[in-house]
Image (cartoon, rainbow, N blue to C red):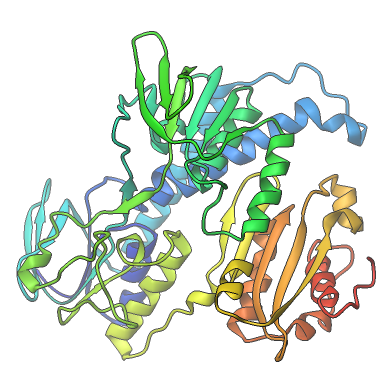
Length: 459
């Protein structure tokens, strides 16, 4: 089969790249080893975890928060099987949706694993073996969980987020190794459902990569909710001894629990791709080097998403997929990495876009900070969700917004306005003079923009 473009991997970066390229008139093939399209994010990551986060939040509200609203709830029992079934249904509907979009856009799907076999040649190994020729290739093979030496995965008691999405009962005690996004989100799910949750983090802080102050304040909120954190803790082993899980830590007593979730980051999936057949060499972290157009050192071969440098985020991969497809088809394609938001879907949510204070200080940038708390806002009080704040960082000389950091209700939705502001080069004054509907949580962003110049109205 001859194609204009072959995409290896049908995750959020790969399938989006394939669809966009097809929209631009290219003959596109996409190789995916799993039966369901959508990649880790859709099948065993972003989507199922959010389904469980929503369900567990409603359960927690019914048991602990409805009374404050004058709603008496009794007999609110957990049907975990039904909750998991709903999660699976959401995933199934969306994976079928991607399959429909492939057919709608005439993208040819190949089942198996793809590898390069020299310039312009791609081989499919697996259920539907094939030898393909193509003008261009986009590698979108994603990432996999990082494995810690001494930690023995057994797929049931000690495992990754994949297993933690489908526990058949609520653990009495869940130990989460890693205080990053995945560990905090799934730890929150099982805490709401009744588990004791202990988070072990090697660093002296949680949410590495996010603003230090934001992470510190978020930890305080999570601790109030009952999550236990042990920072500066190095795990030396974890295994199931036939009766319980035993986690050993350097300089401390072993921790006994019934489930262990290992979430210490992810590594690129770049083995077995035949990169050597076109002269591509991986960097020290096994990532594929690319230029600003996402092109590798091999002509006609591009790479996107988790297998290249940058944050491992589905929306970052999607934007790169569109940019790569458009560059291949039109000669133009661009991603503004300063405007890529990140979100932790805990309760409250944590969201950031642009530069952190740590980065601005390290770069010697003179900036001013405006912050406004949700506790001063009417809509947040009506929701009963007043933890947190919006913080705006703006260049002191030009007033251009450099970063926005949010801890609070629906932060993941609110950060979109901040990302748009950075994308369009907006100033804090632009946001301050934009009329925001009242009463909406977005007003807190406006007040934070005003606060940077000492003009906040409601504080």
